[in-house]
Image 1 (cartoon, rainbow, N blue to C red):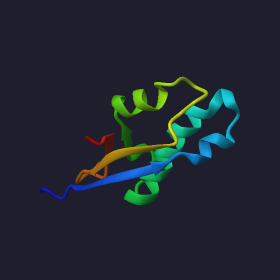
Image 2 (tube, rainbow, N blue to C red):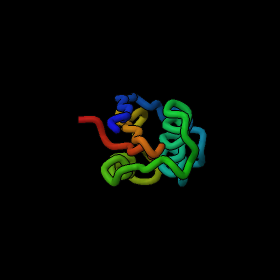
Image 3 (tube, one colour):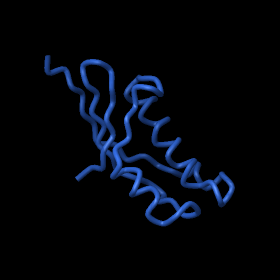
Image 4 (cartoon, rainbow, N blue to C red):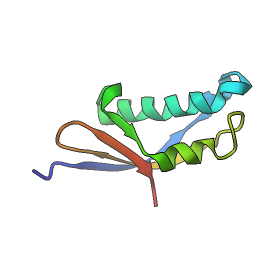
Length: 87
């Protein structure tokens, strides 16, 4: 019924610096998804990233993503994980 698991996570995005300059933010989005998959034990199709998280990653353009991001991940009964910005 109310088997939601909620976590606040600080996800480091250091690996995005290894990507070519023109693809760094794309790599950062993939790193957020990978970290959520690893910590919440779900696969890629069960991770839903909120629009606010995406906008935060892209606010400085494709070349300069943030070095880390704090998100709130909520895992629902059906296995879906919703990722939103931590308040």
